[in-house]
Every structure is written in structure tokens, then in C-alpha cells.
Image (cartoon, rainbow, N blue to C red; front, side):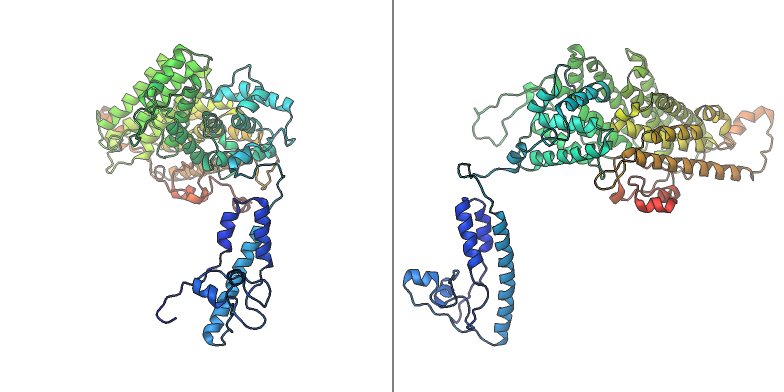
Length: 629
């Protein structure tokens, strides 16, 4: 018909496939069978597959057999006529198009055929969400991976060994594995996964189950409950045992989203469930509170978000809130467990660490000289840390989290003062005393933290949470830099005693021996080794960098000209004038490639050379292993 635009013909099986999932099995089977039995392409007599009546109506033409009327014309009593195909170039193009359509229809038909599964006659045919089907799936006990007795042993192991390193999720002593499995299956699964650190292949298998459960709850239409928050918190705490790439940030943000949706970041009386777009002003949802359990969980998310992001130079997405003080005070005054008393001090110390992080670059080595803002900021924070320690009701070494956290804060203050911000202009006479003070404080803090670690009972570090491992990695790398900086001939008289006491070379060897005792020959399904195997490789690289740098420093010092003696009257002033803490090559960082970045033991190595050598610090690959051979 001239002047009339004809809508191109599009096959309909795709529409049928979308609606087919909501049909009964009998209807689905009938439609699939009709699709499979329908002839394809042009007929053997050369006629096209669409009659003139159906073409004018712009509907699909279906004819069973190569001859006869189509179904629609036969039903309406019309004369059905199929025109002969054309042999022009346009016809050849349409033939090619029809062939492509036939191929697509065949694929759709194949998908439709495979989607039809037998369903019991008396069962419901209503739609089921992925979460509802997942909730009926078998767990580790049903699959025969673990027995009920074994899960009880693992639960007791979690309470005795792991829970002290994560007092934010507390399992009461009277809770059995059976009751936890029944009431909180997701939390039960994450606890089993964390506690199976001695069986890495099985641990990685359960980790995959955790990923499936998380996707069912958070991505599909499964229930997002407070139990999911607790399970995510346990999974985050020991994420060093996860398969790579580790998803610490992703799990953390999912946990924060639950806190936001359930309004757990505020007191229960301020949880306003009515929104500003609600048309019914009388509609009100009663506030729900999980008591001390929710307060512990909120404080735990703050601790991991703040402590990890601070060291890894990331934005903290769950910073301190005044409501946290209220949670800590309620837990301290009405403590259910002994660990509740320590949560107040953990939050206060992390608040001090955030305060150190908030010091601007203009205040750190920005204005130099005695009494400058940089020195005042440094000494004020140092004094606040000392006052905090003096106010603790118990010795610092009675709590692993507090001990590691405190000396990490001191090291972080040293890191910011010496390495993170380089001054635009050098003023050796004015800044050297301040830098030496920061350097000495860092050496003392590094010795305290690392001595505490290497003196622990063997294998006790397997219960450490992820934040503590990051703190140990930070202490080792920063201690290596401090010793290299302190080896300057003009600085050495002020730091030699502290460097000998730290003995970082021997300390690295002792740490490597401890890690080697934890390495196993086990591999997971993807052929990856356990986390301690990778820790060993990284520590050896730290050791290699330190020994190489110290050897280079010793060679350069051997060619230094002798220092001319100065007059006795101005000996001390002349010594300070000629003294300069050389930080060249120790405060320049090269970004680690995004594709190999991981949340484990970040690369704080001081120059581009070592960054190139340790380019896969986060992900130890087979290629790098071959290069080391």
C-alpha cells in the first residue's frame, strides 16, 4: 500500500517467554510444544510464511503444515493467500533477515523448553522469590559438611577464642548450636565460617554459601533483619580468611545500609518511621529495639570502618556520632558481659585517632619553628594520648584490642608528622628537634607493639580480627622506615639506643618465623593458598627492602667526608644547624594499581622503587612467584 508505513515484523516468542514464567505447567508445555512444532523459514513451494490478511493486520501468522490456510484465516472464515517470494535483491536481504530471526526464535524455544520443569500436582504454582527458595536450601549440617556435635564445638571455640577479639557480637553461654541454627541461621553460618580457620578448604566452601545468602537477602527480596547485620559484622571481622579479592568495603557498606534503614544510628525514641511524603499523619510504626545487641553492633561497625579506613587512606563512611557515647555509657552502667566495660575505651581511643586524622596538612609541618602550629598539634595529640592511657581503669596490656589500638594511634601520629605531609620549604634548624621527637616516639611505639605480638603464645594470632592484622602490617612497615631515617649520621646519636632496642632486622625474622608456623599446604577449589602463605611472602619483601636500604645507606656513609670540629662555645647549636633528618625517598608514595588493591596489609613502602617491586603487594600472583625464583 503506497504511502503507508508498515511496522517491521518482530517475532513474538520473546514476549511469550517473559509471560511463560507465570503460567501453569500445562499451559507452559502447550505453548512450548506449539513453538517447537511450528515450521521455520520459507515453505518448500517458495511462498513466504505470512499471508496477506495477517500482514495487513500486522499480527503473527501461524500455519500448521506447508499448505492450507493459517489458523487465523481458518478461524475467521477468510480466504488465505500466501504470495510467492521475490527473487530480487530485496528479497535476498529479507531471506537473510528471516534466517536471523529463525535463529533467535530457535534459541528462545530452547530456553522455553528447558524452563519447563515437572511440578507436583498438588503443589502451588505461584511465584517464589530467590530468597524464599534459598531459605529452604540445605545448610552445612544438612549437606553433611559438619555434624551437630562439630558445630557445638566450633561455637564454643568462637566464644572462647574469637569473640574476645570482636566483643561487638556476643553469643550467650547458654545458646546452643541447635538454637542458633534455628533462630539465626545466617549468623550461625558466618560464625562457623570464621571459626574454621584450621580447615581452609571447608572455610572457603562456607564462604561461598555466605555470599549466596547475602545476595538473597540484600539483592533479592529476602528479609533484611538485625540478624543479617550481626552476621555481616562477624564476616567483616575475620575477612582476612576470605578468598581473594576480598570484599571488605562492600560488606561494610551493606552493614551500614542496614543500620540506616533500621535507624539504629539513633536512640529508639528518635526513630521516626513516618516519612515526609506520607499522606496519613496518623500512621505510626512502633519503634523496635534490640537492646544492648544493637548498640554493640553499631559500635563494631564504627570501629572497623574508622580504624581500617584511617590506615588505608580511605574515606570513613561511618564516622563518630554523639549517640555512640550514649551507647557506651548504657553498656558500661548496665553491662551484661565483662567485655561491655571495654567498649567505651575502644570508642574513645578511636575517636582520638580520628582527631589525629583530622589535623590539616597546614598544621602538620606547614609552619615550622619552635612553638609553631605543627609542633603544638603534635604535642597536644601526644598529651591527649598519654592522658587517655592514664585514665584507663586497667593496664593496657590486659586487652589485645586496646593495646594494639593505642600504639597504632601513636604510630599514626608519627606517620602524619614525618611522612604524610612534606613541607614546601626546608628549615633544618627549626624542624629537626621536632622531627627527632616524633621519630623517637615512633620507635618506642613500634617496639612496644611488635614485642607484644612476638611474645604471644604461638598460633594465638589466628584469632586476630582483620583490623589488628592491618595494624601489625602498618607497624612493621613504618618501623622499617623509621630505622632507615634514624640511621642518618647526624641523627643517629639521638636514636641509636632506641634502634638497637627495637632491632627491626631481628624483629622481622621473628615475625616471619611466626607466620611460617601458620602456613599450610592446603589449597581451596581455585588453587589459592591460605592467607598466611601470602603474609609470609609480603614480610620477606619488607625484610628485603629494609636490608637493601640499610646496605645502601652504609655504603654511602663510608664515603662521607669527616665532620670538621666546631668551637666548644657553640657546639650544640652548630650540631643542630648541621643536623637534618633526611626523609628523601621515605615520604613519596606511588599508588597501588586498583586491580590488585586489597584490604589486607596495605603498601606503605616509601619510594617508587620499592612500589614497583611490590606492585602486587595486595595480590601475590604466580607470575611474581616465578620472578623471585
